[in-house]
Image (cartoon, rainbow, N blue to C red; front, top):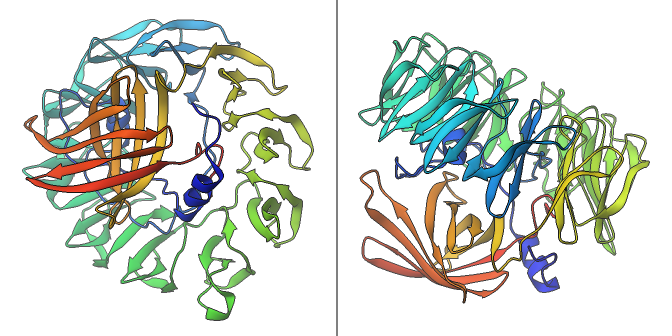
Length: 514
């Protein structure tokens, strides 16, 4: 991975808003669907409110429980917290441990290993998600079903698509419509919606021309009149009406009127919203659950509150300086960093100069800035890159496992590109290269649903990536070249219509989240 982009490209990247997506969609080749796509959603639902997550949350180290995913020579494996390899890097894909099992792909099929690195469910599925509530969503051919931890089908593959179980129910698609099943496979809410989300706090968002919410009896709460909707968080749901955002309660009442041009979910009792007062020039303020201003508008960049603190970007003549405020709006850690992310396990990643380190809640460095890229701590380890070395560090900043990073000409992982098709339709691409394979996904900023891509790239940087429909036929094509390591250009084709496209690589989202 190239460590830095040029100043001009960095300035260009700052223009774009980063979108942290909670859903993916588009049509996929069921027999080639990646576990990463399965683990999100294959419902094609729109991300409810693009306003909610314009500032990215802390990039989390890839792990859950006692295993961490590693990558060597284009293959994936697992280590434990001590850095001991429990499963050699021999898999085509690997997922985090979830409820005691982790998914992997071998020879094109998905299976699961246990915490000891032993195969618990043989590779046999065409797609797989993580275990949630004791069941994992899997694909057999073009159909979706659910298996238990013995690998036995609790619900046979029969649905066009599905989501993971949440609060005892899972959304499934049948004949183009979405409904909900219980863990026996019984349909408890008939498929009749264009799109559906998970049940969260007893409510699920659904779309029937417009977005609304239902309870577990399938009853519509209030009216379905919203252009976008987020899941409930702390008893309130962020919704979009026209071009403005407001908040619903669980009775379906708009308890905080839709007056904000941008807004986020509630977190720890507060939500960041753009001040509706024109005199504030788009600055963000924090409101409480009654809609009252708790922290006055002072900053253009803020995060949600986590563990009592939120990072802020304070604009100074030398550029943005980042620090942390408490819930009174006072500085808990003075602005002094070039970038910062939320605290996780007591530590926050911060960038000073050109390097990343970690601070504690007093603002003291616990790991000096010496890394080129870092991720948040999770279960005691954090993923980090230092020069050409990538691996996992402990709380003292020592690598417990490391590997040499392949050159960008041979490999890169989950790089983000932002640009446009036809100079008009804004897109975001998330691409991975492994040798001559180039794959990932893209989405339109105005929609938010991810569409899977797969293709080939030659030694000169020329590539072709395709979108496959449900029959396996090519429905879209991106054909172009890497003009530079940070710029891709080419032609997009769909249904016989072609338009030019161009996209610029952003600095790693764990490194620059502006």
